[in-house]
Image 1 (cartoon, rainbow, N blue to C red):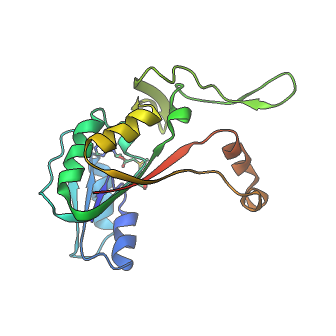
Image 2: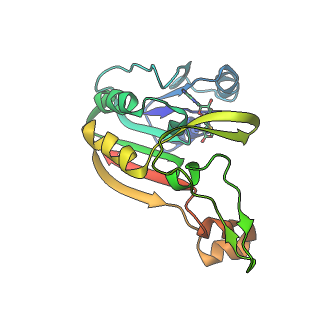
Length: 197
Ligand SMILES: C[S@@+](CC[C@H](N)C(=O)[O-])C[C@H]1O[C@@H](n2cnc3c(N)ncnc32)[C@H](O)[C@@H]1O
């Protein structure tokens, strides 16, 4: 399998524990890859520094391509989707999460309270796709906003069949255990997509 934007490599190691024959972990960040390598003692996991915007992959080489919260940093999603589609073996799957387009549409979305004390979130410029800036670990981190339709249609145009979309929302039980999850009921922050060849 391939883990695109693998960070510290914890998913790569977990996938191996679940029985993956081999894992290729790719990330733009030298620091992430260094740490992933330092934390991994497994010859069947390879980590490589790669930019997903210029990535090339061998044809029909993977059964599963996975990515967590990395694709919204990619400018040319159409190119990446085509690259992944060709790199998957017949019957292969692509599963990924991105920041939900509703959450991403506004730069640095933060809630405010209205005059009734109710939390409100900004959704502005939803249909204006392109660069967004956010302060997250560093100031002004660059992301690329795409509408939900663009994300899904890009996958369809690359030859994927969409299997399922999920928009994470906590259960009341989860909120009881972790009250700060309540704001996840206000707007979806995360989109999870499952697609197959
Ligand atoms: C939010 S972190 C998620 C890391 C990991 N997937 C996880 O779930 O722990 C996003 C990762 O995407 C990587 N990334 C951002 N832009 C990238 C690009 N153009 N090509 C490859 N990796 C990129 C970052 O270096 C970072 O490791």
